[in-house]
Amino acid sequence: MFKCGISEPSVSHVNLECYCCEGVCDDEADIAEAARRTVDDGQLRWIRERYRASAACENNRHMKNILKNSALALFAIAVSLVVAEIALRMEGRYQDLASQALVPSPAIWDRPVNRIESRAHPDLKVPIEIRFDSDGVRNHSETSTREKRHIIGFFGDSFVENRRVEDRFSFTSILDVATRPGARVVNYGVENYGLDQSYLRYKKYEKHDIHDVVYVFCENDLRDLYETGLTKMTDNGDIAFNVPTTNPVYRLIGRFHTTYLVISAYYKARELVNVLATGKSEWISVDWKQFLPEDYLARNQDEYAYGVTRDFLSLSPSPSTLQLSQKFLALLEKWKREVETSNRTFSVLVLPREIDDTVATKLFRNFDGNVVHSIGYFEPFQNDGHWNEYGNEKVAELILSEKIFPFHEKFKRIDVAKLKSDIDAYYNRLSR
Image (cartoon, rainbow, N blue to C red; front, top):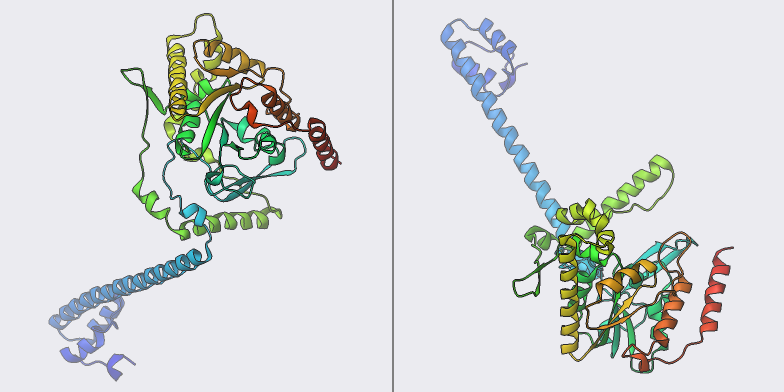
């Protein structure tokens, strides 16, 4: 039975149109069959033309259906995203991330707000909780950093942030407990930060009620100044900072809570695949270095960076290293000057390792400021080069005893024996 309800098409144009125009002539075989049933060439040409028109018409209909279905799918996705965004905002999920937006940090990387992170203890292998408050500062107290008064702020790298020890055993928390009423000690440290980044962190929080600033110097801070490439010397000898460029697309999508929902879903899916493949549920880490600027990564891995400290300590440092050390001192002087102009005190605490003390002795030779050396007060982890709980206790004891610090009178004495006993008990309990 052919279309139009007829069992045998005639040779008339009308019936041939009925036979071919609605898709019965699907291929050349159908046209050949139609040709067998026709009696003149004109009718056959007409059939072929109708076949081509029908095929084009069918393609158009097919394309319209694709576009229609695609539009419906996109509309459904858009509605779902809007509904999800509204629900996430009402629930407050990812608010800490969306409130910051995906914008580059002037210091290359920074800390999140209202976030709890964890890291394994180098020796005991237990998780160490790290809390960041609404200001993006490591803070395990109930009072946000911006609400604290008469702050003694410590700035520096991983030795200050102390991500490897429980907060109660970090030297900043030990000092905070030892402050007299009214004063507070704040940990403004960020792992891997150098002098330039620590200065920028101070500028970020300079509206906090900071009364005293302590920059904790590490020997690799000279190298860090080269690697970051954030600064340059001006013609008048001042330090200028490079302004990072902002990607408007990242800035836009970073405001949506659904952006972080999709990212979370991606890593949960990866975890599920890993469980199905290996039978184990393992933390999927993100290599944060992949988000760093390419020029920073290039300097971070070049031969000069690895040899900066050795070159500086040599009898005849290269011109580039001498210029780097001059820039370092210029920035340190700039920071000190701005702090003291704000009626705050500025001090430098040199880490207690021999290499830190050696570099600082040469580097700060012409620095007109308060520099405190702490060599001999270092006690590291067995499986990590940072100071452990006992090392934190030692440096806290040093700071409390050093009258050279201008904030010395803001502290009261602490029970050192009890603190050491608490650390002993901590190790005994977790090392069983």
